[in-house]
Length: 274
Length: 328
Image (cartoon, rainbow over the protein chains, first blue to last red):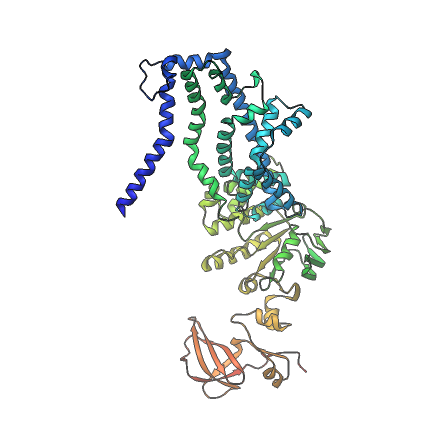
């Protein structure tokens, strides 16, 4: 039995290594090669290390476009998450605490947000009508809308574990409804909020397709879209492309490594009592 | 002053009426206990007084002011919850001062008020702890402190001692009674435990099925229970109550006799029965008898009584201690 467990463990580690680590090593090695050498896409040690030069070149490419992209992606991520946390917690709170006939309808919309796939063309049409197409603000709203369903569900499940007595004690202490929420409930939501921030920031920061559709224009570039800088129909600079991938992947990876324990805690903390 | 007057309070949840018309006056400075079995509406009534629940009809006056539709914070009340409901993210100091800081009182005033309350309740060394680092009794005291600091006219307690162990409960009963004497405020206390009701109350309100069964001082209820329900609810062990044929033979619909008002003897009495079980409490013994034609009968006798299960015993009710309801 013990031997079998050991074998299964070793096998899973080997699979995880092949699936997750080898591609990363491949990206890392190729990011350090010269253009000619990386074009062959071999899994080999670089003959000449050009790691630093490639890095500088990627950052400087197209008038420091990568830095602009970092800035844009950060603004979108922070904006969308701030909006998502505040509105998701509020909606989850009301859905859990206030029993009205509207709840079913609102809950239906929340689930619809999770189930129904987003339609790109009508969304662009709508954005054009309200003048938010090709704007960072519009992108923030879209990212917030995409993540809101999941966020509301998480918050609602967690708020169910907070005793209603706390709300009532605060009301007796003279708290207005918004004070009950911001001074008593919201501070207690920290574990879920960390989960939401980490999960959604990785998703939004790494998003490629949505900024591609809704945010055209060189000044609106986001990090994932900078990958197009080095891949075109005629010329592909594989070494720089890989360096770019490396630079774009690292920040979310760091976030995940540091917070993965809280993510799991926050996901399951609402699970016992729903 | 904080006299509480309830005027024909009714409350329905959907089609179910849980409070069926309650008229009650609680005098200023009185310690009033609502007692009754679970589901009798006592907690709902307390929540209606606090304003957390809205009555379907009827009026509430606190201190001569009509507060029927007022917000909880404007009623001059404070409430202690069964679960204590301390804010887990705040320290004891912040928990006690929470209401004052919401009211945007100056920091120095809050600090002084918290300090005074903490001294009253011996909480001073605990002020910087979070609730999770406190024991049950300490949490209870913080919850009471949070109520005191509001300086309310009326304190509302919703089964505050039911989460504590027996020894601590006895101690807190005394502390609460002393606190009441010190503050002189009106207190309304909800419990299902008749011992708490008897030991602490100036006035007991016995509720049953959304109605008041009887209002009176503890000894009034003990000595003159108005209905069989009150007779069975007040007193421990509970009164022996008989209905049907047995009661009719004694000229009433319901006949009752308290265990402590039965005299046991080995040779003479009204009923003869066989001892089924003896509970020894030290100072007292509770004797369970099986009496033919009557049914089970519980009697209380001295702790040193030499009684063994299986023995045949006579029981005799003491003069003037019998209760007859619906006497013909």
